[in-house]
Length: 452
Image (cartoon, rainbow, N blue to C red; front, top):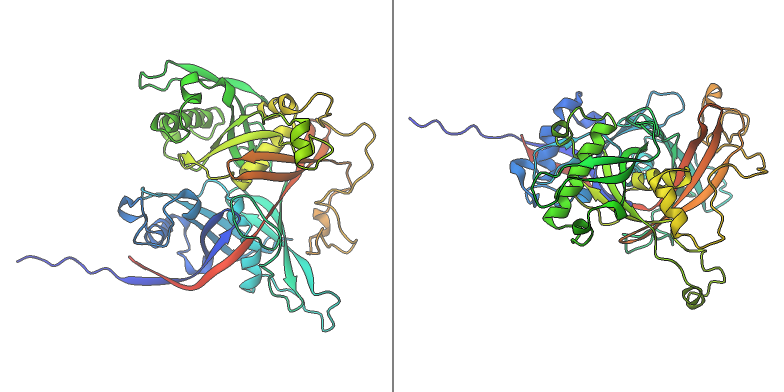
């Protein structure tokens, strides 16, 4: 007698779908998932549609790309001075795996609004509002990288999140309300060091192994700021790869080979075979000098200074083995940090791209004014930069900071990063924080169904 197959059980989880920065994904309460993260794979793969290695994710709510197959898990935090804990989950497309090794800055941009909308961060309402709109500080602890992120979210006089506004970001057609995302002390998110190998640039040897390309070496900066990144000088790639489309099979294979070798050098994997099992980190970016601005182009744009809008570097980012449609937010943090530090690949290319005579800030200004650290601004009563409570012992002394606005050109436009550096007695300069502006909005809410 044939035994009928056991029927699966339909289950549901309350969920919110949000567009956050240039990503889209589900936002879940941690209380609605199994207590152990090791048990998250089965429900999340089924929910997003990655079961049975479906590259279309047709039987789930994923969007069949790395930027639309993401999950943010949020919970109230019991950490001093922190509002919510946030865990990022990258759900693979076409593979039955999830990755919790790194953070997603774009998804993080939705955590502040989500936390306010879900009542995880109470917003005091004045009986006599003085202004129609104001910003609320949400302090977020990312459990993947164990780093603090502070978001400035606009709310109206009733304490509701304001989603609509005039601010635009490359990669999103419509405007929205500006959300300032500040990555505090981003260095060493997974390796405990800004430069895990102790070098600001180095050459790594690559043996691709398919016979089409002989062994070669590329100039790289291995940096860990917000996420670990392998930053490659694109000019040092083999000529055959430079001439290939960025998404050709050969280009993708070479990019992945470089990423895996970089993972081994950074201490994130013991072997290249082990590095192949973790697709989310480290991430890979190719960097080249931006096209030089000309006086004529400046006149056409109505700019007196032809270098005013000049990007620092041109970037091609990869995500989960595919070209990224724009640039990861954490990629903006890592690249801006590299541009700001003397001796890195990005810093050198930025110098090449600048027109003669334009100074580049590689250290503190010669006569800097004393500027309070963005992580130490407070009212003397334990309030932070935007008003959230922080414990007094967590407030450092006022420091001298150097600020630089860094522009990163990518395929969808230009990302602007506000980079703050502080002096460090042993290491010279340290990254105090990087601030990037995003937009986000809630798309739908309800229950997402899946079969166990």
